[in-house]
Image (cartoon, rainbow, N blue to C red; front, side, top):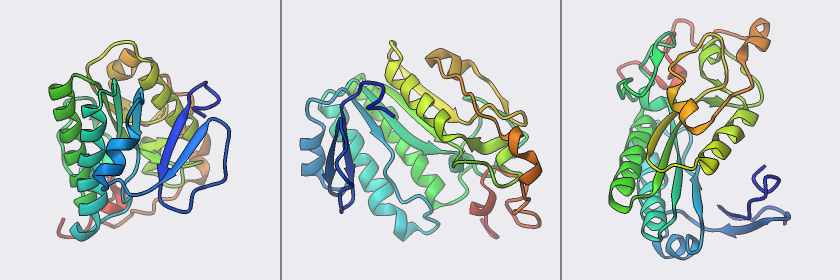
Length: 238
């Protein structure tokens, strides 16, 4: 999507590298490798940091990729003078929040898991980089991003992949600096959100979960996560 929009992309991932594609330089490696990251971010204009262990519910799983990795990537990019840093946070930073809540910049951090805590760390590291280096910074509290919503919880949390791309491009195209915390949702009717932060960067979601209402299932019924945006990440004793 970014290459179609005219960007030259350097993509870092774990080996093996995917097939070659126009406009993309593929690099394999680990985000905890300081030397690799320091070299990779040179002469780049923007960073989009999406790498992490995405379902880590135990502390041992998050420390390397989600804590050390986030700190390594953010520090390397900011120290290299990259002008804008876009970092994937998550709704699981506030997973104990009701799906009926008002989503705005004042909503408290209420992590539902070690994964959620790791995203709070990433946001703090990003804020530090913004304050120290002056880069524009965008923390994206990404919802449930997949081709279509599957559960009743996703009436609120769904983020259409096309809207995720729109959100990334809005951050890349935003002319101003500053620090921005942005909830990553589509235009879901069940969602109560303050759109001021979206409007400030020009993000206008087009998708909506309402198209799929007849096929949604309440998979969290009777569990600690029922009615909460964290869903299955909210566990007994959490």
